[in-house]
Length: 69
Image: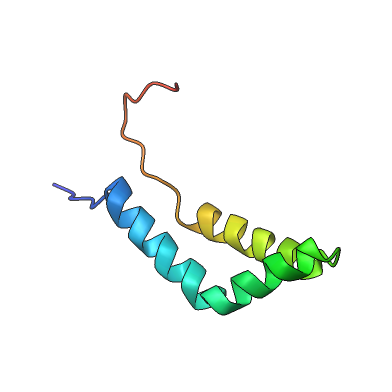
């Protein structure tokens, strides 16, 4: 018998939040948004790309038989 642990959505949210903050602490996030408001979009684009890669690395689990909504 093979046991597979599938983290709950709440666990995934916590892992993602920790990864977001490790990569982009709140000060850096605010700086990226401030610079974007001033027309300099480079940091915001980098942050968005980093967050997308974190979401890709930590997807929500789907069980067999789940129906796409």
